[in-house]
Image 1 (cartoon, rainbow, N blue to C red):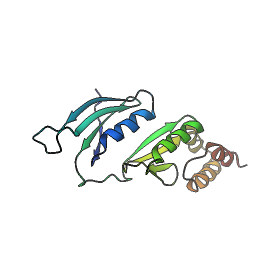
Image 2 (spheres, helix red, strand yellow; image 1 turned 180 degrees about the horizontal axis):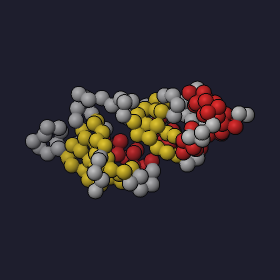
Image 3 (cartoon, rainbow, N blue to C red; image 1 turned 90 degrees about the horizontal axis):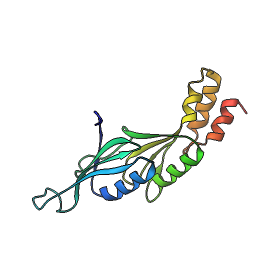
Image 4 (cartoon, rainbow, N blue to C red; image 1 turned 135 degrees about the vertical axis):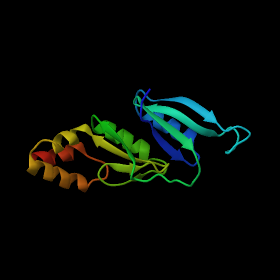
Length: 158
């Protein structure tokens, strides 16, 4: 059992979120669903909370109410192996009401913030070459979805 589990607060649409989130990455699945009963406090049969995994990482999602809203102070970061993975995840998470932000960040249709980050970016940023890091930083600050080829060109000063 994972010692620390992130808990996402939602105001409805949990089934839709679970379907999207568990479709994104291998080793993702719904583990448990608890529904409201006749006594409430939500509508009988609606999901109260659920436990699920994304890429083996445990999460809980709770159907609270509109009191708490998601914001970019908490985001989920997916480290991507290549541009195809960046593109696939970006499309899946921005479709149907999601929104692009800057520097590889986006907000999905439920208001949850994500960072879709190529692992190569971390390698470039920790290279120890201050000039290359500055060029890469300048390049990604101008991007919404990160473009690995463009970041590589900036890194090599091309």
